[in-house]
Amino acid sequence: MTKIEWCDETINPIVGCTKISEGCQNCYAEKMAWRLKCMGIPKYQDVVDRNGWTGEIGIDFSVFNKLPTRVAKSVFICSMSDLFHENIEDWQIIRVFQAIIDSPAHTFLLLTKRPERMGQWFSEYWNPNKKISTKYRGQVQQLNLRKAECSECSFWFLGCVHGRKEWTNKAVTPNYREVEGGYVCDAFRWNPCSYNHGRAVDQNDGDLSVRADDLYGPFPSPLQNLWLGVTVENRDQYVERWNILSQISAAVKFLSIEPALEWFDIDVWSHPPDWVIWGPETGPGKRPYKDEWALMTYKKCRDHGIPFFDKRKDFLAREFPK
Image (cartoon, rainbow, N blue to C red; front, side):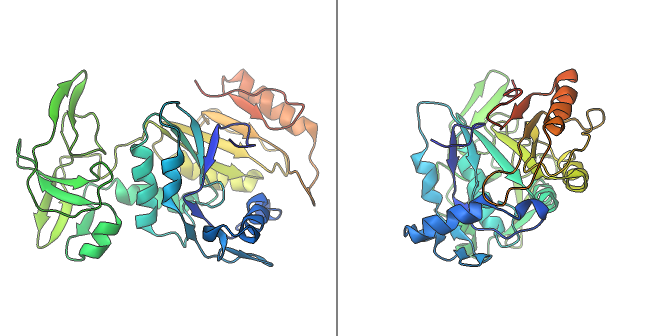
């Protein structure tokens, strides 16, 4: 359960952050992290001190095991961090994405104030020419990667098989079968339905690289159970962050205007969001806002068919994407 009204659950496989813009001034996650540290929660011990965020990162990937298995949920992931913080390593981001892909029943919502790295990361890991060294086996194990030769087509696969951490060169016979709309190969969980079963890669001098004729790269694009959003507090941050997110492929791209520190007009023509969340700052030291900011934003969304979610107690609307 969570007190955040626009999702069913929150999970935090990674915690820790640093302040990056004006909207971070009264960070609720920073205060909550201090409380959880004082309660003795291990992953919070180094990420915060009396002065606030330290820049250290805490990890606990076991939180994914606590998700319900029979009921689909909307899950806000990394509410106590920013997954694209500069101190979070690529392999840690990959572990998060692996868990998302292995939980197709749930919809994961991811917010960032660092879309620059998000864009760079997606560009790199959707890159058909991305190479992953097989020489450093410890590093590969951390990424939960394996390679195996498919007995059906003799292509090499790169991927995560049922969460296994083993690194093996043994050939496998995948559960390769035809389904409606394509084919499925259980030997490669990251490509659940495609005419190319698995992810074909070439091997050269100890490196594996995704074949140029497999245009999706190491992750399918977009992930159908992942919604990407940016948090903005004023017009400058909206222009900068939304312009980057609008260029990234995602099943749903949403805008979280919180804390709303000023009114600004959103672009509903060239790059309209699929969903807008709006909320003022709350808690000690909260900065003022005007009701008309919410009203003008709501009317703009309503007139253009964009779902609008007002976080205030006396809300104008609480709508979700279909």
